[in-house]
Image (tube, rainbow, N blue to C red):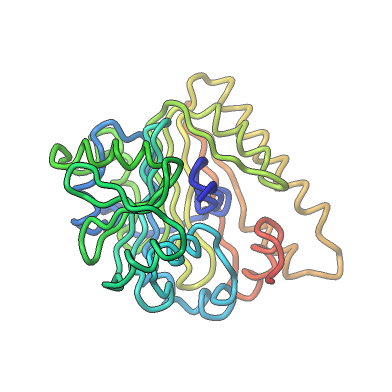
Length: 300
């Protein structure tokens, strides 16, 4: 469970956001998960797995890819991610990080985890299963949470006081279409993204952003939008410049004998208005697999 000491890899797809023309009505969040969001949350990352798995792009290009956080959550809770895991919601206040999930949990999961070496210990009427570093807790037969044990205790401390996403995050969520299968909103404050490899420069870019949001939709390709509000005009210009350089480098590194991939880079563009920078991407369905391979690695 060491992967929960940093923001899940799912956040890494912030760089893969593109353009969409749907009405801004806000993403769908399961009510059972909404009521677990602490009032001081500054980062939310949602994944509607049921909707994602139904898209042609997922079925054709992503079904056999392994997403570490999804796999770890499924392993620790006894779920089949293809059948029984419906939705994931990552919540963080910059210090406490928890991954919430909705699904159909097996009744024998707690004893199975204990047989695997995990310990059971109580806290405020709930059974945490794991150790003092990381654990999982079953809130109900369809809701579970996992992450650092200290963060789980904090989550349970706040239970009952939550009224859903804090106002700052709720305002950002209004810019995200309901159809988005993946989305994230950030209201400022410390956050550790933990990007490596080709995505490492995103760490620095996000450090220049005060608030931001991202979503994508895989129903017809890879499309969505990432938006960030910077603290100064200069930092906004620097972020846009870095994004343009990123796109330019991608073009240069794409072989000339791959015209489809060259065309994919044409779908990436940036805009700058006042201190707000936006990154748009519209990747055609036929090159989604190659495009994702650049940033997430080849299929195993």
